Length: 162
Image (cartoon, rainbow, N blue to C red; front, side, top):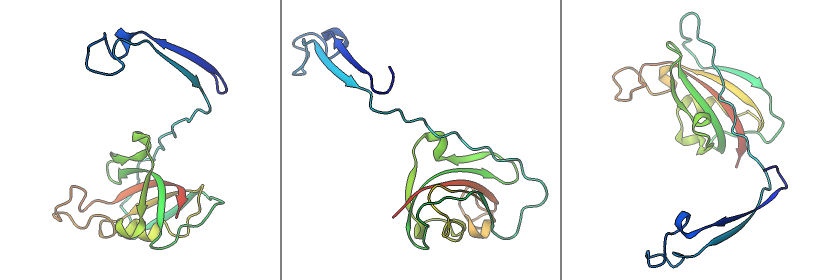
């Protein structure tokens, strides 16, 4: 079906709520739905992160991939983002909202320090790569977090602020 299209679906009882007496008020009924396709949302493509070369940086590295033209993220503000995170040394993905197909909304003050420092100034519509050393991520090895002691790389799309 194409955007703007309309379909009628007629669903017999055996493919809906079962025969009469099955316990649902619509059991035994044929259901008719009229479906209008208003829009199609294409899931975002998962970004690729080139494998790192050389030693991990000691400080936060901020690289703008795309400069957005929307509202600017503010320190301590709330952001709506898609993100993709990999380990610097192995390039193994440890988390990705892109892969899940669901963006996330966070107050910056509740995120790792690397995000608290690396996202403000970014504009909606932008894509930024953050290379975050352990002290600005999950702390040193042995800190109790599985990513402790690791330098992390994030590709972040800023979808909204507020």
